[in-house]
Image (cartoon, rainbow, N blue to C red; front, side, top):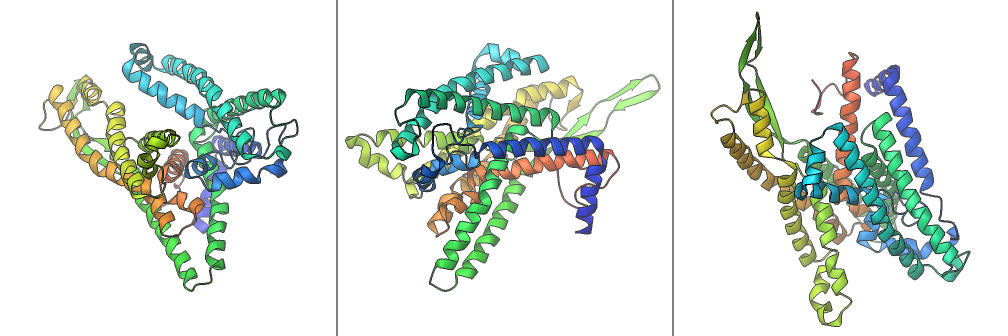
Length: 441
């Protein structure tokens, strides 16, 4: 404890780091405040029906967690940052198939600015589709007494759409400002804060569930759940940080009286190079069977694929996660580009010829290490359903896996790396004397 207090003091001794920490906390506080500001024209006392719908729906519960409760509060930030993330994914995919976006990716900082601008435009398009859908859901769930201006009021619908779009764009601006002047990745931090904000409520619900049960052994069950959650977190951290190191050798160069290169290094290949994207893609695809549930002829066949805790749903979901892990790894990790970069800098893998042979070798290694990584991600993806099946509260079960767990672990580790680098640069001890935070020298 003494060491932790000393580390916090060291953080605030560094002026730049102190300013970044306070700036980040200030903008996160603004975001949390906005999640409680209800849309104009809605009575906050009439939102109980929406909260009940969110609690009983796995997908909407997940959206509510990502928005920090703003979805169930009918807040001005109800759509959260997810439309921006959806637009970012689409732009990334366009960078693979369209030469125009491929060219922008290679233009450095100017290309990145253009890509960000296109992402903002596409975010508005996504919002023009999602905002009416959200208002339609409010129309179906809320009673007439919840509307101040009337359920079908044109003034309410038009103003609410504008506010929802402006709320998401403001949230996106907060994320970009945190990235530029704060600490960590702003968009990821906003999602993480939303997840963490829902954790006390979910934990309290689980504790109430255990202590209201009349059967014995509930305290033991609660302790077992906490131990299991801790083990899941540890395993996820190991997955996020796991890398396969390929040894590299650089050719010696003599310039004047000095020798350059000739040292050994490593090429780190992440076991989980795809991150959380495979689960997001798979969840989006698992929404398709809901559309066919509207028709009597297909309802029986697709009913098994809409049961959140069902065997067929989770089996198909896990297979989709594995497939999308390979797909997203293939589009994000380019062995040919790696081989060319090594050749250009005078590096090579011992025993492997530079050029095509090197790219083939890296591709084989990535294919092999992606398999265990994809299987583990699939297990993480279906863990919330398993946790719900064994009797854990659905809201608390979402923290046992899925996108929420991977985002939470990834963002915390990334932020710790940045703080660690600032401390070590000023010759202070890092956050931990021991540990394996990547980036610690």
